[in-house]
Image (cartoon, rainbow, N blue to C red; front, top):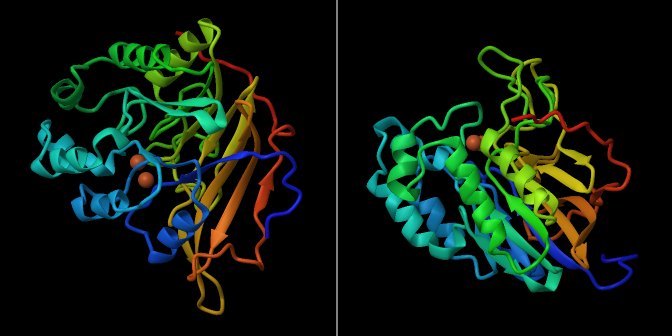
Length: 305
Ligand SMILES: [Fe+2]
Ligand SMILES: [Fe+2]
C-alpha cells in the first residue's frame, strides 16, 4: 500500500540486467503502476531479438540502453549482425544511446550513455561503434554523451548507462570494481566519467547515474555483494544489476526485482528496492527496502583525465 508519500512525486522505475528473466507478472506490475518512465539498463538477452520484442510490447513509456550481451556476436564479428540491427530497429527512439528523453513530470531529462559497454579501458570493437554511431574512441564517445546533455530541456539530468563511470573505486566490491578474471581495479567507463565532468562544468546537474552490468553477487570474493547505491556530491549512483532478477522463496514463490526512484522538482527523493510477486503485486512480506539517499556515504571523486 502507498503510505507516507507526502507531496506528489514522479516515478522512474528501473529494470536491471534482465538476462531473459522476464515474467508476465513484470508486465502486469509496470502496466498497472504506469511509472512516468521505465528504464532498462540492458543485457536483455544474448542478441535475443525475441526478448527485445517482449520489452517493446510493453505499453508504458520506456527507455533502454542495450548491454554487451545484447551485441555479443556483433562484438565477435566487429560488425553489427542482422539480429543487432533488428533489435535496434525494433526499439527505435526508445533506445536512447547518445540521445535525450525528456520526462517533464519529473522535471528531468534522461541522457543515454554509450550502449553495449563491457566495462574497462577499451571499446572492445571501435569498428562496431563506428558503424552504428560514427564513434571510434572513448573521447568521441564522451563528446557524444555531452552533446546529448547540451540538447536537454532541463538542468537536472539522469544518465542511463549499461555500465557505470570510472572513479567509484577499485575494490572488487566497489560499485564498478572488477571482480572476475584478474580481480581488482576500476572497471568503470572512462568516457562516462569524462562526460559527467564536462556536463557538470556547464552547470547542469547530474542527479543520478543509473547503470547495471556489474552484477550484485561477486565472483571474487565468491558470493560477496557489491555496493549498489552511493552518492557523490549531489549525484546518486545506482547499480540495478541484481542478477538473476528473479529469486525463489522457500515456499517456491518467485519474486522479481525492480528499483523504483521517486522524484520531485528535479530531485530524487526516494530509492526503493521492490519485489514483485507472480500476480504483479508488490510482495507484502517484503516491504520495499528504502534506501536513505541523504544518508548514503559520500565518495571522493578520484577521476582525473
Ligand atoms: Fe549483465
Ligand atoms: Fe553487461
